[in-house]
Length: 603
Image 1 (cartoon, rainbow, N blue to C red):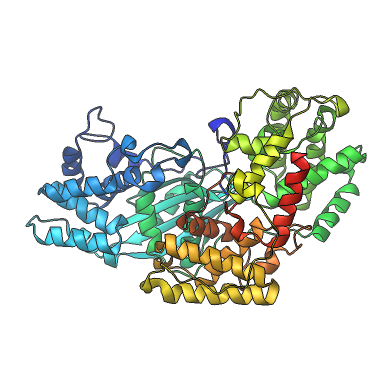
Image 2 (cartoon, rainbow, N blue to C red):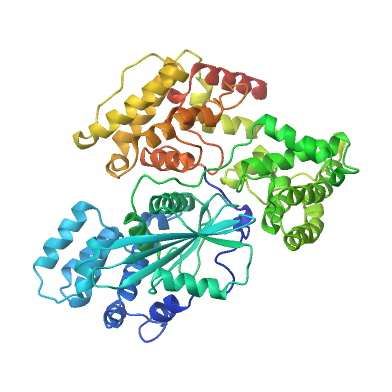
């Protein structure tokens, strides 16, 4: 699911690196000075000559990384529907220029591009070009394939707004690079910022720890495979976020960071969200009710608002309802409640009071330092006036907010003024709900013609699937089939087979990349379950945890893997609820529910 900030603005989302610890060497060595990017009229060849004069690999790799980031497919915002040509030369055009211009500078760029971001076919094509040239390139370039990622460290703050994953890489030539990747949990466990420096990781960490004035940050060596999984998953999530996060070094260094992460071993564990069961949530509510922090918050409205706050705390952000930061408070009051909760002003106005009591209780249970609790409570005071003004202002809410986020409705209105109870201004939800149903099945015609005939028990369709990926696809297919046979039914088996066949046929590259078959199968089954309401009480009531446990994996990055696979298959990429955009992937009970909803809102 893509996450979209309202009106093109991202909430701050938390720390980027421990305060005062970011070295300046990256900007000093790459962005400034003669021929640097800050030159008002930069000349690419002059830039390359300048960075080639540096004995360290970073300046040239950083320049090549920035070029790849600009011309890469992730640069374009698909929701703006702009042609590729309008954003500058394509990757193919730029590389063709480098191959046609026989100069030391283009040879260096081609070698760096081949190492950082080329597939096997492109690498071979570049190698043939370079073999025909006589330019002497830095020795470290030829040794990049033998570089070694040897240490990974994670910095974690007690309030878990986000973590920094630091990776150290050394070249056979003795040169070293260190990447610092900040992964923001409040905004979806995505990369919010990253930079690469030329210092060895041990020296960088010593520098950062010396500069840091935050005693609540811990520094821990983590498994190399875990670092790879966390960085890769967070990059994928960030690529689906609109508008994208941009800093002076991100996403310019993304191809370089991806190359460094790819040197780490596979098989690691990404971030795993805690899952709070209904019993655990009820127990937490009971403990809060028995605490002195709940005094005066025992009426039905306050109790219901506490459930709403728990929904946010458990199912969004880091997923820990006992940790509250100033940024989490900002997101809840400035965006989430005003957009998500459709209710009258009198009810919504009580939320800050509930939040204050709950924050005090939670921080007491987790023994959060008193000064951090004070900062979080100050944030409630700071944002409450804006919150109270927002809930009294016209704005899209509920389904309308979702459609405004994806551009189906104008986010600036006109919207009705909120009222109290029965006096609240009505919003015509019938067209909104019908439009959501059309998106779920692909078109208005498909919605009108929808039926509830069960999906047939059909074999897997191998038509159009390349031979070189059939072994991988067969492995994923067997795992999907076994899940459907043991946990679901024949309709789910047919739906997952159809989804897998479309991904393999439309985006075979998804199966040429290295990746675990069980994670791919779990992602496909999870996606099919989501669009068929498998995880809701009315649609089956299975928990996501139980489904993923069948594959022997814990809930973590499966949604990001599903997004990558579905994008490869050409499925709709929505910023709101997941949809496959065609009724052929929906089981009969889900279609029956859509038909009933269609008829109710049509009437």
